[in-house]
Length: 325
Image (cartoon, rainbow, N blue to C red):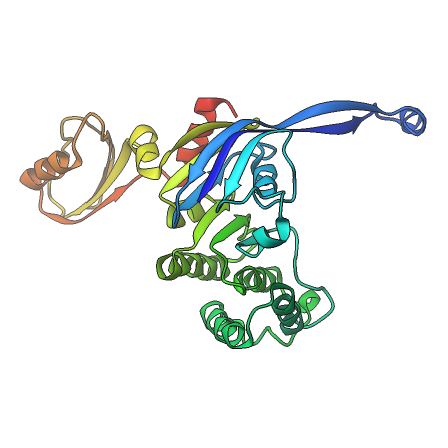
């Protein structure tokens, strides 16, 4: 579905020293530095996959999305999406993709959202019957009915992003590029957008490439992540593999009937013991959780037990540290 091979892209960025004198001097003589945005980026995405494309700010995520969507032409390398080279034959190509940039809008600021949708219908030449059915479905799934008659500028950020996601799907694309689609959204809006993307992938098989700094989006939606840093692909694998490597610490919180003597199973560290509640820390790579629970059951009457893993943000941060990005 998507294949990138050896994609590289450089940008020239103007530089100057601080101060009024330097500002005036830059009017007559401007100095530049070269920034390597992408450096030999290669990966592939299969049909129906939801890929998390992650990395710190300035890593090259948005530049990659712009190459794949045909906005930018790389300096070298090849990119093939559904048999198209994105920056060539763009009119035929863009009919097959949907793009959402979290900090850019494809809707018109001063007109009602519905007018923007009607204009997009004309641009993409969507048959009226298909357009009506698609819009009804998107309106229901994203709860857009109260928003369609309102100018975009009068909507909240969360409402605008829901409208943007719907706009990207009006022409039923086969591939969806989402660049920070949940940026600035409240908890309810995030859950709604995540559920929409997941349901759409299941029902239509749309391929999704998602970039975000919200690691809960990544954990909720993706099975595979591609980590980019300083323009290079540093890691390509499943979230399960990442957790197995970087998330072996567990905290067990046990509620038990009072009266039991303090007890520490082998392979664990007792963090606290008070008022019928105990907390243990262990490394699941060295000690099986099931063995610890069995040992605890032999020494106390357990009422409840909770097993906590590291938050996904900490796991991804460890991945960043591992590759020094």
